[in-house]
Length: 166
Image 1 (cartoon, rainbow, N blue to C red):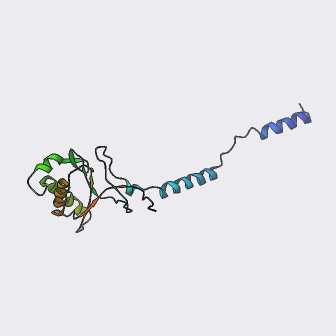
Image 2: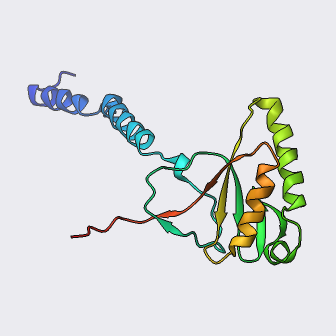
Image 3: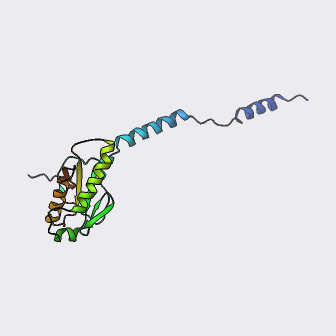
C-alpha cells in the first residue's frame, strides 16, 4: 500500500527526531582541565601543620611557610613526635637533666631510618609548642635535638595580619 505524501513527510520528520542526543565531551574535558589546573595551583600542602586541639600556637608576622619536616608537638600535658607520645610535659619540666633522653633516642632512631633513604648531614625539625608551655621545657627539647642529627630547629607560629601603624 502506498503512503500519502503527508504520511511520508510525518514519518521522515519522526525518524529525524528518534536519534539519541549525543553528549559533547569536548566541553566537559575543558571544564575538567580548568578545574584540575585550579586545584593544582591552589594546593598548599606544605603549609599544613599537624592538627592538635590541645596546642595553641603563638602568633607572629612571619612570612615563610613551613616545609615538610619531622614535628614535635608540645601540649601542656604531652610531648609527641609524629603522633607518638614521648614524655609528659610536667615530667620533663621537673627533671634535673638538661636533655630529654626519650626524645634523643627517638630522634636517633628516626635519623637512622632516614639515613638509609637520603644521607644528609644536617636535618630539620619543627617544634609546635603551646603558648603556655614553660620555656624550660622548650629549652630542654632544643638541647636534646642538638645532640642528634636534627640540628636545624624551627618553631611553628600562627600568622597574623600586620596592622598599619599610622
